[in-house]
Each structure stands twice: as structure tokens, then as C-alpha cells.
Amino acid sequence: MKVNEVPQDALTYYEGIKRACFALNDEGKYVVVASTGSNEEATANGLAVDELAATLEETRRAVLAGEKSPLCYHMERRQMNPDILGKTAGIAVFRVKRHFRPDIFPRLKPSVLNRYAQALAVTVEELRTVPR
Amino acid sequence: MTTELTSAGRPFVHHHSAHCESGVLVALFRDKGVELTESLIFGIGSGIFFAHLPFIKWVGLPITTFRSRPGSLLTKVSKRLGAKFIAKKYRNAEKGMTELRERLREGRLVGLTTNIYWLSYMPERFRFQFNGHNIVILREIENGFRVSDPVLDRPVDCSTEDLERARFARGPLEPKGFMYWAESVKPDPDLRPACIAGMKDACNMMLRAPFPFIGIRGMRRLARATIKSPEKLGFKDACRRLANIVRMQEEVGTGGAGFRFMYAAFLQEAAELFASDDLAGLSREMTAIGDIWREFAVVSARIIKQRGQSEETFAKAGGLMLICAGREEQLFRDLDKIARKLKA
Image 1: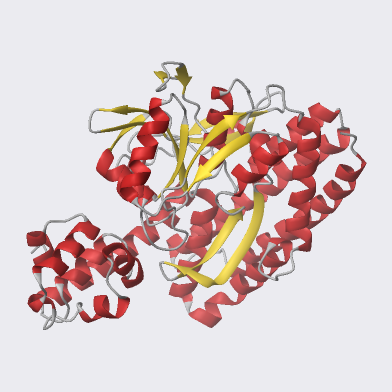
Image 2 (image 1 turned 45 degrees about the vertical axis):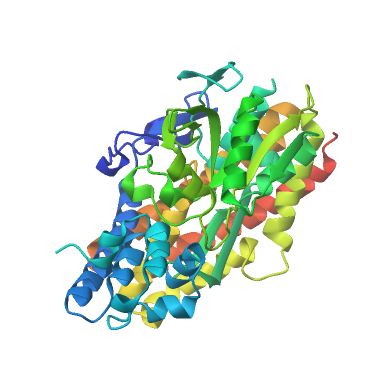
């Protein structure tokens, strides 16, 4: 890759930062060039981000329809899975999965809710609801 | 370039790096008065690698990596350059944060391994649950720390709460507050034996790894799987897999084309160091291979974007990867021979 071939596609989601890329200058020596991102990268990233957003939206609807508990939504919002959430909150994975059931979740003790809230960096009130 | 102050009051020049771990090591070595380039550190620490691990899933997709395991650059580079680093892990988050403050009070420059999701200064779309991002802590500020993140182009602030979460995040490859700093660094390290050791080690990993998922064999395996993937998984899932490979190659801590350009830069520096035309030739070849990896990314992006409407096929993408595998195999075989003949 030559210096003038370093992708400069000005990706908006870079939020003004730049990435360093190695490229050859005119004398054939490697130099580090700041890049504003490439469209290929954006395509791959976009697919992953869209997919996460779609699953999250699906979960949100499921919570509103009373099929899942809000805990599931907040876990997915933090891009976690039951395993990571269980470890962070110090609660066994099978219990975490059980707490995804809308009939079980409202009966949880405040101490358990606190641990989830702490692990997910949300308040207990937020944890009990999902955005409308 | 921005000039900052470290906790010791020394000026610190933030260096924009392509890869986080090598970038942190550049900063730690420079603080001890040893100037090394990022690519040299990457080469000496045998950072180049390939592995496709179908049995380890990350957000439901198999892991593909173009560089060595996080943390291995630190151990390999310090050993080969005769530097003494102290590295610590903590069970207790509070203890880990106290010790960080203590080290800063002693005026040290400290490297940390963190989870990138909880670093809120990162652009939203870079944030995902990955536990191997390395950063440098410059000094404590009000309600937080001044951070030199090597992959960003300027130093930033990070709140104490975010940093604690990032350091003690759970999940695969937990950082457990991993923290390291340079105790003593040889003032004039002998680069030649270090480069030779780095090259030989890289050749071993790429050519002689005893598992089919690693090195050139892993690359071929993944290429074949990619060609078959649309029939086996269906078009949509095949796209997800392909996008994940491209993401790992172009986005996750890289100097372009999955670290291949960074390694080419290392080979160029080594060629000068040993006054070897052979190495210069290999550097050019590595650049050419990197260009093919870039082409693979372009072709893959077209497949993903146009959802089957484009001329590009999975067979073409996999074919490009097979070409890379073939040329890299030849390159590492040549490098292995050359490295054995070099005089330290």
C-alpha cells in the first residue's frame, strides 16, 4: 500500500479520530499515515452493528409483549451474554437465564437487582423497564 | 503530536500507533530513554500470526486473528531486548486501583490491559466486549486519569469508574486488572539477536504449529471453508462470517491488511540493520501480500453490500485468501532460511 492509497473515506462514526496505517512513501520507505477509515471496514462494521441493533429491538418488543424480562434487554444493550453477565454480577449462569423469564424477574430481591444494576451500569429503575 | 506531562513531570509525546500493544511498548521504552519504532517492536515480539478458531465463539462467530495472543508481545519483547518489566494481576479491583495510583505517584508510566467496551472515550462503533485493549496511563486527574491510547491520535481523559470497569471486566480473556511497567531497560539494547529470534519464532508459528487452525494451515482451512460457506450456511450466515473476518483484519487493532504492512515495515528496518538485500526483497513481497489481503477485503465488502447481486463470489474471496496462504508460506520459508544465516 502506498501513501496515496491509504483509505481516506471519512467515516462519520470515527467521530473525528484517525487511525494509523503503515504505507510506502515515494522513496519506498514505510511511514505511518493517519487514515479516516475505509468503506470496506464500514461495511463489515455496519453489518455487525445493524445485527446487534436488530436483535436488541426484537428483544425490546419481546419484553413489551411480556415474553422476556427487561434484564435480557439490558444485557444485550451492553453486548454481554449470560455468561459474562453472570460472572460480572456474581450470579450463577442458570439463575441469570431463569431471571430472563418475565414471571420470575418481578419477584427478585432488591439485593439481586442491585447486583445486576451494578454489573450493567444502570439504575435499578432503568433495569425494571425498557424504553418505549 | 501533542506534548503531555507524565506523573513524573517528564514531557510525554503521544505517538499515534497502528496497534495497541506495540504502541504501549513504544511509549514505555521511550520513557526509559530507548527509542524504538512500533514495527520493530512488532517484529521482535513476533506479533505476526494467523489463527482461525472455529470452536471459540465471540458474539456467536468464530474468532479469526491476524496477530499473536494479547500479552505475548510484552513477554517476548522484554525477554529479547533484555528489559525487565513487572506485570501484575489483581483479584480485588480496589487493590488494583490503589496500586495503580501508587505506581503513578512513584512517577512511573504504566501500561494497562482493558476491555474496550467500557472505555467511553472510544467512538461508539468501536466499542465491543473485547478484553485485550492496551493503554498507557499518564497521570491521575480530577475524577479520572489522563490516558494515552496508542490507537487514537491524541491523549484523552477517562473517568475512574469507566477505567475500573474496563480493567476488571469479566468474560473471555479477563484482564483481571493486568498492569505492567518497566523496571529497568538496557540503555542500548542489542537489536540484531533480538530481530533474529523474533523472525525465527514467527516462522515457527506460521509454518510448524501442531494444530490445523494456526498459521498457513489455518489460512488454507479458512479459505476452503469460505468457498463452501454459502452452500453450507446459507448466504446470510456466510456473509456474517465473512464480515467478521474483514472486521478482524481491517478494524481490530491493525496497521492495514491484518498487520501484514506492519510486518513488511519491520522487514524493511531489519534489512537496513543487517544490510541484507534478501530481507529487503522479503519486505517487498510482504507488501504485495498485504495488498492482496486488502483486495480480499474489497471483494468481501462488495459481496456483503450487494447481497448476491454483484459479480464477486465467495469462491473469489476464498481464492484470494489461498493466494495469500501460498505466498506467505513461501515468504516464511525463505525468511526461515535467511534468519538462520544472519550473524547476530
